Length: 170
Image (cartoon, rainbow, N blue to C red; front, side, top):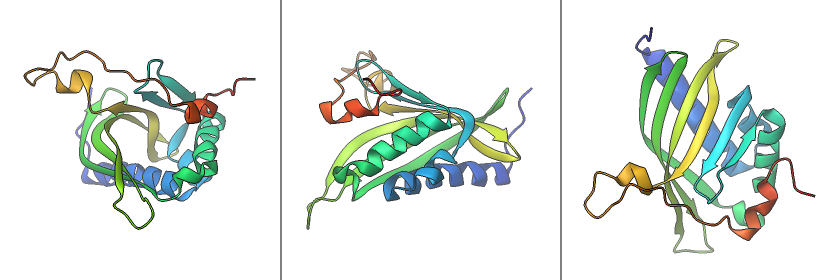
């Protein structure tokens, strides 16, 4: 049986979503990892082969990778239109995500347009991410529009992101 989330639940989930963005965008690796349940999973489903990081060690690898990229400095995740719904084992959320990149004195670039599909679970009395799936704003989500097939649109993983794979390839 699902129970409607309370106002406190909504605030707690929104805070996790905000902490995730702030941690990733400021190089706060442990803050990023702390947004997830110990067995939490991050799935990036935009590439030909979706990539996945499960558990705190893998998530730490993900956050460290981005903190070590000079091109990450000046990046900001903007998350909005958060819709939270109850599920049988917690809460689900969908939200828009845009990533802006600072480029010198500007103009700055909109680097990513996508959305998050999140599953939240209580862990030690807190709502944390059990699973976050990052998706591009393309494919099935746009199936209701004329001229859209609804088929998943995948792109090659850019070579600079190859080091994201976990465990790292030898």
